[in-house]
Length: 237
Image (cartoon, rainbow, N blue to C red):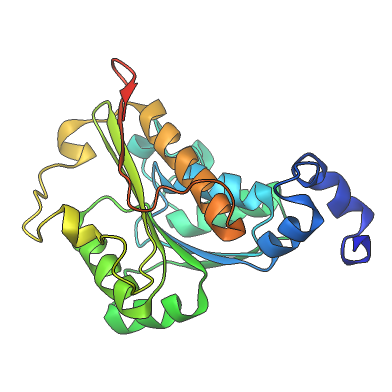
């Protein structure tokens, strides 16, 4: 089995491979996985960093925005030096430094239905790290149609939430539209309400954790469950 890993890879992923729930076979599964992350902001930053560090084989990053100084309070994948760059290219450079073995596909655009549907056909999981309801509903609609699992996260002020929609077509689990109507409040954004930097870090890190669990089919996923975080009192449900 070790023949599929060189010495450098065995060292890089050794602490993960030691876990009985992962082992060499699990690491191989992660290396063969393709995950799309929609949004390279506060949530997408820790998601991308931890998935790349964990050895996910392919990451597609989708965002049409550029790095602004106001992003740096929470979007930790970017830096002062990358202000003005496309977020996906800033992120891709950082991820390549962290783990050059991961194949990164940066898409510096807002995908239309046809483009997003085509992308979904090639991924094992899509992660919603966006910041607007239009993108969330578009992702939900196309992920349901494609039968692709959708991992959703959101943060605002000192609150956050995360859940997983398997979209397996068996009717056992809800979809995003079961939680929210398509008349979602677009004023409920960080730019209008603010957000604590560490809150998006917590939710984004939880998304990375759930992504790894789902890809490996280990543990109890958040499928059918909504985790709500109140970081001010640190009550969670």
